[in-house]
Image (cartoon, rainbow, N blue to C red; front, side, top):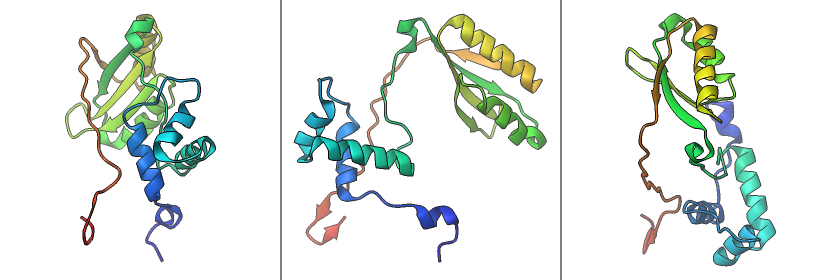
Length: 169
């Protein structure tokens, strides 16, 4: 019997799922039927590609499938922000911050500023308003670090593993 209920219900992706993840990691074709094109490259029918993606999302194997936008080109703003949260209030403050729709990526750090999160808003004013709201709701000063320059880091981690002459290496 597994140690935790979460492990008992977790289903590992099969080899085709892993190939699909690897293939989509580099992008989705901008065509009228992108899933058909992906399927053709992998030897799968279009409906199977869509079904597999839906299943991977439903299981939580994939947490997100969608485009990444440069929000500034649309007039918006990303702001990395941090709070210095007393340890005894960390969970309560995290719940407050996480409930705001503008907040993504909230995580703990071992630093005086121990809670870091990203605010994404459709305008600079909306981002400032969200940060002000977080300060009011938490009662803590918000340290904001608006993005000044964008860097592209092309990190790809292969989901599939090459097999050697004696099995998986």
